Length: 416
Image (tube, rainbow, N blue to C red; front, side, top):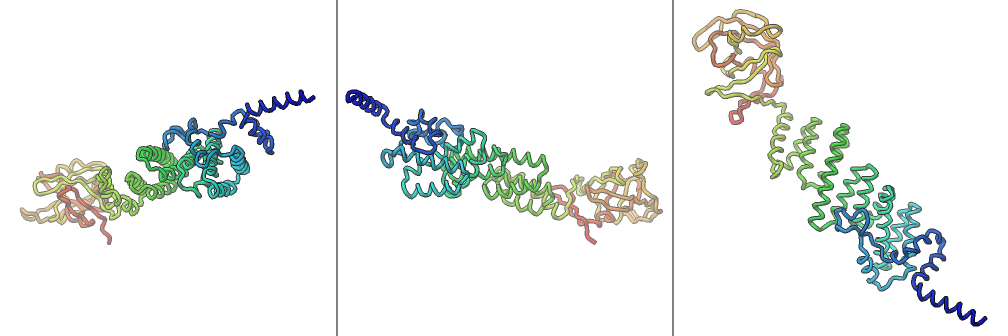
């Protein structure tokens, strides 16, 4: 019997020697209430103490270029306070899994705060394991736990770009692009390296473009306005946001806010020229001003007009003429609904003396999109400079100015 016992005892000693830490860990597993859950981890028990995220789906993310903490980095975590007891690691993992399973972010945050005040190495080990769990949720198409727990964590610990990135990816999976954009901006604030910043910025701008196109196609203008209200505050140095915001305001005929947005970028080296053109348009819209191209002819200017919505003429602007005129040759070409109403034969004073000419009234004359109603014209012979004259009986209905430099006629509707 003693020999039998001795042999058994020797076997136990050999097994214990060979098993070492693994046998100890197995006994710890069996001692917990969740032995069934941990049993499947036994085969990988050695790896549990050196968690590596180098093969996670975020290896190509715009963070450190190699995913989450590597095995070597985890070894450094352990090295900070000597070899961390395996039981402590299992306890940390159990706490994190319990909080995640219960959906209790407050429990998780409280636990991290306890670890942070007690042992930095344990806190960092817990952080690595927590990130692994969030990554697993994403791989299993479960974005909501990542959003809830990741957001709760970053609310208390603002300097973790990896978790902010996970939250951003989760919002994308949950089809919440605006929240994803905000989470990516939170990620950007935690990155120092220039190349990584550029990569995250490019990712954000591409996402913004896609989201803008989606909202514009659906004509969700209020959502678009909210988007750019956030963007210009999140990245005020990015001039494209102001430019897109201004164009949106113009589309909605909110010229005052469009002018305000353009004022930020009129001197921008890339967009300044286009912004200035838009600003000119906005200024005209704010004042009700219309710009009509004119052609110089000697010391005079020619302007296109349309009579009775159908008949186009080119008239010479004559601020010294009290009434407008049309050449007899052009008048004879008028037909159909464009024809005017005869009024009377009128005596007209000209540079060559007093003449008699027939007076006609047109229902409408259009200068660009500005309209003059019940416009009188006389018909005169031998007028060769243009199709006729545009006199003060038309021009006096507007506040007008001839801009010789830009060669435009500026018109504002006169208020009576």
